[in-house]
Image 1: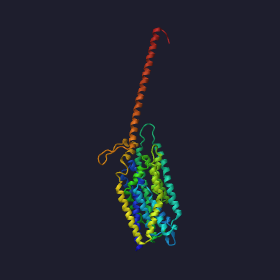
Image 2: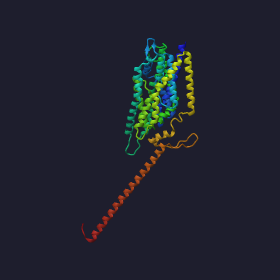
Image 3: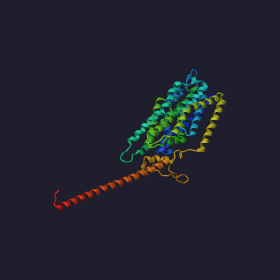
Amino acid sequence: MELTLVVLLVIVLALFFDFTNGFHDTANAMATPIATGALKPKTAVLLAAILNLVGAFLSTEVAKTISGGLINEGDGGVLISPAMIFAGLIGAIVWNLLTWLYGLPSSSSHALFGGLIGAAIVGAGFSAINGGVLLSKVIIPALAAPLTAGIVAFTATKVAYAITRRHDGKKDGRGRFRYAQIASSSLIALAHGTNDAQKTMGVITLTLVAANMQDPDTGPHLWVIISCALAIAIGTYSGGWRIIRTLGAGLTQVKPAQGFAAETSTAATILASTHLGFALSTTQVASGSVIGSGLGRRGSSVRWRTVGRIASGWLFTLPAAAAVGAIAALIAHLGMVGIIIDAVLGLGFILFIFWRSNRNKVDHSNAIPVPDVAESGYAVRIRKSKVKPVKTKTGSMTQLTPVAQSAVRDDVAAKEAEKALREAEKAEAAAEQAAAAEEAHAADGRTDRDANTGETR
C-alpha cells in the first residue's frame, strides 16, 4: 500500500514536471514568430500546444533512453527506488521554476537528469548511474547540439539574405518569410513533442519498473503516453512568457528571414537527435540557433551579456538540480514521513515562485514590446507598413524605440538623397542642353562670318 502511494505521488509529480516543461519550452518554437509578428501570441501558443500533443505520439526512443539506459539495473532490478525518483523530480521542478522566474531558457531535460542523478547517487551510490549513456546521449549532445544548430542557423541566415538581396532598388520581399515562419515554428513544436514529452514518459516507466509494476526493457504504456502528451500540451498553452521575452527580444532583434533560418535549424537538429535517441535540450538548440542567426544577419548585434547569463544557467543546471535532488533524497530516506516532508516543502516552493512571479507579471500582452515587433516588420517593409507609435491602455502614445527612430532617420535620409540625385540629374541634363545650344549658336555665327568674307571652309 505504501509503495503504491509513493508510485502515485511520483506519477502526479512527473506530470507536473511535464507541465512545467511545456511552459518552460514554449519559447523554443514560438518566441521568434511572435517577435517578428508572424503569429499573434495566443495563436502561437495554441498552435504549439496542439503540435506538442501530436508529436508526443510519434516516437518513444528518448523515453527508452531514460527508462532503460541512464539508470543501471542490478540483480534486484533498477538501482533506484520510486522514492528516489520522487526526490529527483523535486530537484528538476525547483530548478525549472527558478530559471523560469528569471526568464532564463535553461534546459528542462538537464534539470530532470540532474535531479535523477543526484537522487540515485544518494539512494544507491555512483554505481546506479550508467556513465556511458550519460556521456554519449546527454553530455556530448548538450555540448554539440547548440553549437551545431548555431552554425547551421548562421549559414542559413547568410543564404536567406544573399538570395533575397536586390541591387535595383526594389523591395526584397523578405517580409514573406513571416509566412514560412509559421511552418518552421510548427515543425519545432512538433519536434519538441517527439523529444521532451518522452522524458516524462521515461520517468514514469522507470518508476513502474523500479516498483516491479512493469517489465524491464519495455516501452511506456499507452496511458502514460496520453497523460504525458496532455500535460505538456496544457503547459505549452499556458505560455511561459518570461522565456519568450528572452529568446524573442533579449538575445538579438529578430527579422522574419532570420527567424525562419533559426527555426528550421532548430527543428532539423531536434528531429535528428530524436531519431538517434539523444535526449538533448531543445532550449539549448533554440538558443544556439537564435544566436547563430543573429551573427549571420548583417547589421544585427547579439547581446552577449544575456548570452553569458544563459550559458551560466546551462552550466549550473545539472549540478544544481542534482544537489536539490540529493537533499530531497536524504529527506526521503526517513520513509513515508520524509516523502511527505519533501512534498510539503516542494509545494511551498512552487506556491512561492508563482506568488513572486505575480509581482512582475509577464503575459501575452507584454512579452514582446509592440514597437519591437513593429520594428521587425518595418525593417523588411511588410506590406508597405511603417513603424508608428502604438496607443497604450491609457490612450497615450508610446515613443518609438531608438532602433525605430534610427530606421525612420534612415528612410528620411534615403528619400532626401534620392531627391538630390534627381535634381542633380535634371541640372546636368539642363547644362548639357545649354552647352549644346551654345555650341549650335556659335556654329551659326561662324557660318555667317564666312558668308560675309567670301571665304570657304
